[in-house]
Image 1 (tube, rainbow, N blue to C red):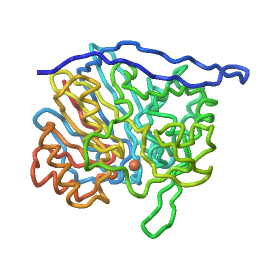
Image 2 (cartoon, rainbow, N blue to C red; image 1 turned 135 degrees about the vertical axis):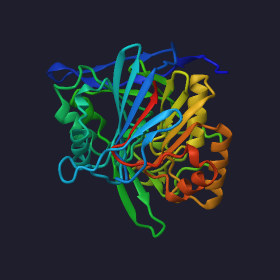
Image 3 (cartoon, rainbow, N blue to C red; image 1 turned 120 degrees about the horizontal axis):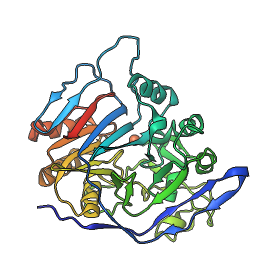
Image 4 (tube, rainbow, N blue to C red; image 1 turned 180 degrees about the horizontal axis):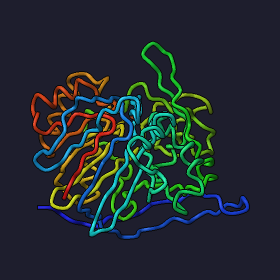
Length: 370
Ligand SMILES: [Fe+2]
């Protein structure tokens, strides 16, 4: 039986956004509003960009979802895959429709091509969500904000899970080489008219979805990727590790520090008569931690689907096994691994719960609910 509680929107801090004449307006903290987790009748989740595009992936009606695959169309409206992730989320409740864009892939070339090829108009969005500050998730967002300026709904909100979403990140390979993950330019987004909302606590988005807020690390086996680093900013800046973590260690600006992904958050829906659909995006906080936080935030135990990048491709077998055992414990109806999940985990899920596994492919539409 589901436990319905209320969300306490304790610290959804809205940011600074540009107003006419180049002025700036700072909104105060929206404190302690009590919000019920919304329920939707139907959620249509379209994977706009993913790492693979498999024209032979199986689709059709399963027990309680429908999986529609994008047909092969030759060179006309061809879909493009890349190392990146982007979703279009369309929900319906009592005739009311909402559209949310979650993450924005790596390149504007692929994202804009696929919006067009899939017949999706990003300017219809009721809200935007960025899961975390890696370029394979925010890459095309600055271009989308610029090209959508004047076309997006006025005051369109972009939900981020923390200030560190806008800090500079790099990955350090085992051989010591660094790969620049870039830095999402918050001021540039605000100048283009987006209203940045820092949802450090669970928050309702566009009246239909909710974000997890920052994700407590409950499991003892889910750790941030060893390669992930954050470039320290000045001590008094939002990108100083001391500013947003408990760390009191002083580091000089420009030094690399371990990235704990404090501001990463998951996106979730409560689908009527089905349960939660939890989308982890890249899952650096741990897919199990992310699901547990979504359950806690909603006060709902039943998980209908676990979706997203689970970031287990580089993980040893032991961690994959513990994750799959936790999946069995959570017992979702479906698991839809994509992006950075890794074939190791897909195979492990298939081995123990093949009927729950939905293979990923760019352009796939999964219909949850009625
Ligand atoms: Fe990613």
